[in-house]
Length: 147
Image (cartoon, rainbow, N blue to C red; front, side, top):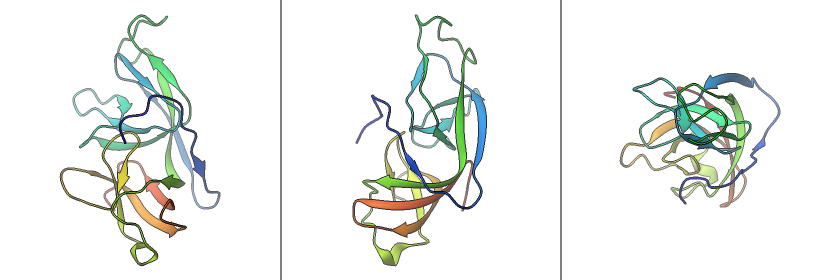
């Protein structure tokens, strides 16, 4: 997959602690609902996740902070509500998910791609909590995690 180009609502599982935080957004970015978010290490601002970012969580809604929008696309001109901790149902988890991999670390590589494979420079987002099928898995996630 590639970066998101449309809102992609996620299914979150009730139970356990859920944490939300509003974060300022990087300049000239568009964040889609459901996108995994990262923290730009040079500005400390939130953006669609790219490889090697610090994981910030999942976007609760769409934010259009592109140049030419009413607020002009400037750094911190807008903010996004981020779900920083919880359980999410993910589809298309890479790295051959299986019931025997429950408890394994889950990594992000783009704002929409996750994997069990630690090859390269992926960032930890959480742990495989429940294997449902080769298509669906439940992941316990936490922003800034190193679990």
